[in-house]
Image (cartoon, rainbow, N blue to C red; front, side):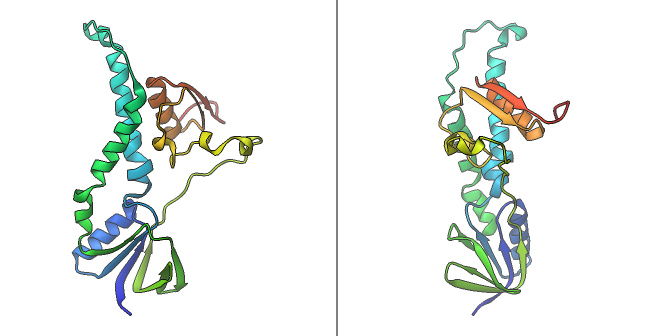
Length: 206
């Protein structure tokens, strides 16, 4: 059995950096990603949220051109807004990104890694060994235990994992949590036409 210098579990920002740098200095690297390369940041976090905010900003500016001395009659159709966000993700995650991992052996979307012992992991029925194993599995959103929330259909409960896969901008949106992420999404979706409510535990936002 081949023994790698390094196995990286999780190909989000941390795992990507570790894999690329380790392979660049000549180490034999195996990287395992259960879903998509890029992790939360690229696929359902920083990149799509900023793309959405930019789209929303452009829409807001286009409807307030008079403050710049421009008279215009603009109609906004937001059906393509989230599709544009997904297109940006697709462009970023293309061949250029993957070139950074040409020297890395990749196991993508084949299942999760499970430890066999301190130097071995299993993906499916296959076992892989390494001198060092770097764990960069990231986090998942927490669904709070709120009375009645379990009675709401899954399609209406949005987190960053499924927010950017929606086909249309929601007509009404309630956001639980008024921190940075909640306020970003509130601003973005409000500027694209959603009626947004924020429910926040503290006396002030952010």
